[in-house]
Amino acid sequence: MKVQLSQQQEFRKKLLLKVINKKITTKEAAIEAGLTKRGIQKAVKKYLKHGDVSLIHGNLGRVRNDLRRLEDRNRIIDIFQNTRVEGVNPFEDITYTFFTEILNEIYKINCSVSWVKSILNSLGYKSPIKHNCRNQQYFLMRERKEHTGELVQADGTPYDWFKDGHNYCIQGFVDDATGYPVGLYMTKNECMLGYVEAFRNMAEEEGIPEQLYPDKAGIFFVNQKTEDGEKHLTQFGLIMENLGVEMFPAHSPQAKGRIERFWQTIQHRLPNLFRLRGINTVDQANDFLKNEFPKIYRKWFPVKPKSEETRFVKTQMSEVNKYLKATFPGRCDRSGVFVLKGYRFFCPDLTDKKILIHLNEQEGLWVTDAANQEKRYTPKLVETDTTGSMPEVMKILIDRTFLKNAKPKFREVYFDIDDVVLSQVKPKYKIAV
Image 1 (tube, one colour):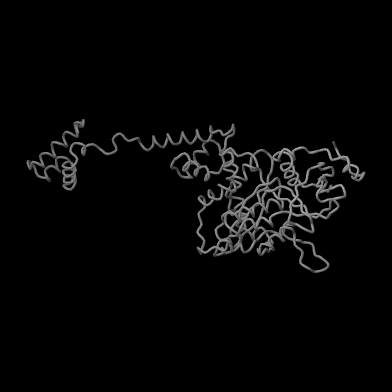
Image 2 (image 1 turned 135 degrees about the vertical axis):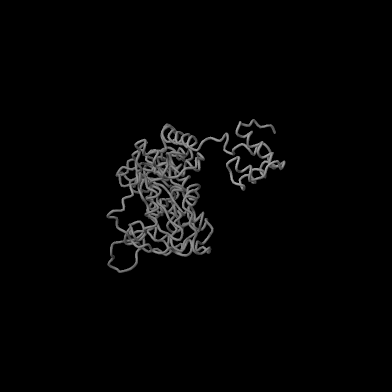
């Protein structure tokens, strides 16, 4: 291989050839070149192996580190300021650490948090998280459980997840042994139906835990003292009892600190991740929270449990799904009409009978005979809420079941009931046609 050598390199080449041909000694060559004897010996050995190429410095042609750093700096600034997903910058209000992780993973820019922080600070940007340790109250950490599924913490947090000025609530379960999310579900506000679906996600992916550790919210516990002194259960408490899950309350947020810290962490990451993925609806968010986010979170914060043995119990979901629902007692009148929190429904197969009204996010609304719950009946929606007593989440569920995503025969809010049935409807009901 022919190599273009400089004048100095030609001089070094002639000197090495003299040493190789034994025209001068190594010591003489070292004095003439201003090197040590060992330096001449290494140069001779390298020349014999690689020829003229060995005389050229290895960094020749490489981009200087300061120039490469300048290129990366300009690229980081361009990414931070000009990235748009559906017309929105996903990096608004992002933390230094999370932005650095995105640069390393997605854009393949190897950089440190401190360097990224200095770049963003030079643009006048400040992280939404301020680390001020002064006057901060500290609490002793409770030791983690040894096995996954031994204890699962439960909580919900309302937050502006889509950065559109509207709060939505994510209900979730976090395993105490690892801090990993094992079941998450988003609804309009915190409700039992959200926790039921989060529990369903956990049961499908991991299994049923031994113990559940929520706060003292009315969804989980009956907090009012009863005169009979007996233990009374909420609907969610009854579901847990039927599934064999022991449930006891945390008396302060600090007691269930792992899930509180989990919320704090994802409040500063998940909105940016939603924007980066183009997620802006509750349905899209729930699909992402169930199928992708748990894996992403484990990659962010890998924790190995003390014991490889798990306490999650895998079971048939067909059996679990029998219990994962909200149930309300009701009664169909002689015309087959029943009322649920101001909404009126028509079920002609259960006229003048006591019924049970069942709801969940996955299956919608259905009814059963209170005396025989084997057969399901799908009612028709007669009249929407006139009293305003229906919770917002249930309104959304009924709207989705009977209007937006329903089969064509259920899509109309009002329908014509046979004249025979109309004649039996009590006068206080006003049917809209």
